[in-house]
Length: 93
Image (cartoon, rainbow, N blue to C red):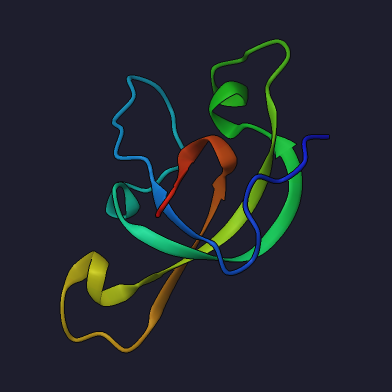
């Protein structure tokens, strides 16, 4: 089991990708900055499982919250939470 790269409170950006295969990164979150609110353990990567990869990668999964106003514009005041695998995320400095 891989050690998580991110911790609760870390700011992360969801990769802005549009792969030619299944991905669990919602289009509305791609490229946006959020905050890790929970580390949920390590699980087989959904992308690999959907493509029937024999040995899917096992990665930490994070619950990441995004300000709703950043995703859809005003009015804001609430959050959208998304479960994202580690390879979907990058560090925000």
